[in-house]
Image 1 (tube, rainbow, N blue to C red):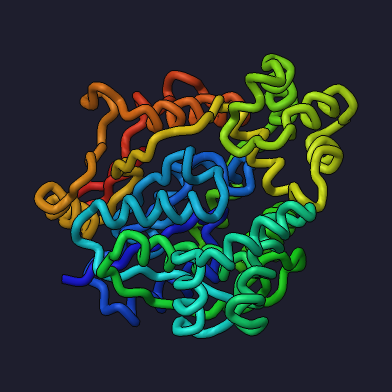
Image 2: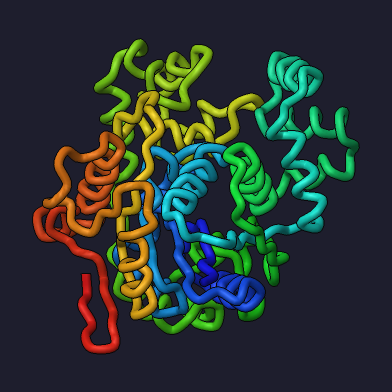
Length: 392
């Protein structure tokens, strides 16, 4: 039995994602596809364009068999932790045979070579990283320079693009845990990650989110996504909640937020009253050393009160198709981590799961959804079987 794992955000699920899923399924000859997907907030530290229940249902309708939630603590974090969470869950299922991911540049062999360097971190590599960080460079640029010095500029260039960065982290995590999971790589097709224009039938998620009012996006997404986008409520008031959460913490308390470090809490407190919107706040705090995406994640982590945490992995089911229900029966025999379909039956709750529940509550506030009817204790997974369809 071949089980393909994919780690994703699907914010929103577009034609590029559909192509990737289909290609990975074909290349791995998978009997089942399980997706570990971000919840209501994304790795960039932003509210998702649609809630996790809707996005997981779309994924099932577009070919996935089972969708599990990537915990907030991993999902709104650096690429390293994002990958660690996804790989930890897939490995914990005990039956995943393949991992499928996308990349902009290079071959799988080249990425594996670079990942080996990152996993081992020789003394020279660590010294170069420290030197570059001390000079004020960002983590990404420091790592690029360290890889260039130790393995050459050709491999260093593979560490810069978004999909490659995650691919390297997936490969690194698999090496660190000595996993037998085989990797399937699909080269990115169509627009680049940061492209803001709608081009052809495969556009970036960034472009789609930027042009929601244009009918042209119908060409770039499956019909299930297009219909859901038309019904999705707008996210409002996020900046006010972010600002309130910062104002409500002292500098000492801010310093304990997961991604804060080296006095960054003082910059955040110093700018919180000056900024007129979220974009200006992030811009005023950010610097060459601290890129905007890290600042955005910090503000989101602070909103949820995420401090340093112990590793926890669990398989929280968001949606399952006919194949997924079969796979769930198999997982009851193979899974080495908790399998969760109903929060009300889990006592005590894993500590990290409480952050997922809070993230859902805050997302419901931002979208004006009924807090009780849409809370994680009441909402249930979307289950589609050959005999019945249940909407979450």
